Length: 115
Image (cartoon, rainbow, N blue to C red; front, side):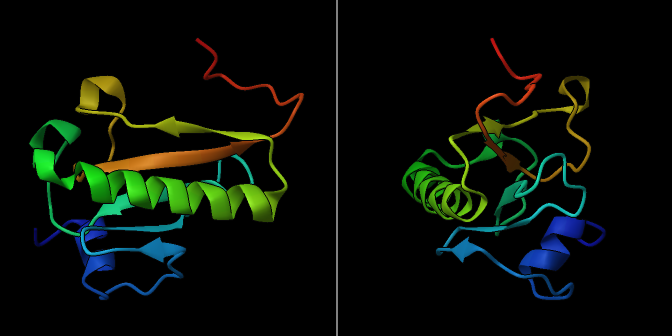
């Protein structure tokens, strides 16, 4: 998609340090860090939401999540992480390109994501 920031990152038009990548997904540090180590898992192809992803991409998505989370946990000396995915503007999705947030957590953090 022409004006999509994540498509530009995926295509190499906007350089950024990739944490991990496979054939369908890649991860990068989030420009707007909510916590140290906050990172994004982004689809290399433009899909608006998780509902638009092909079912067959599940294995590569999980691979990217796991490998990225393990690297971040080690680097940040974290004790856990939140995995967040907002779908559609009503749910807080700002960039209309499917992506997942990994937020490393340490014991005692005040996390707004406790359910």
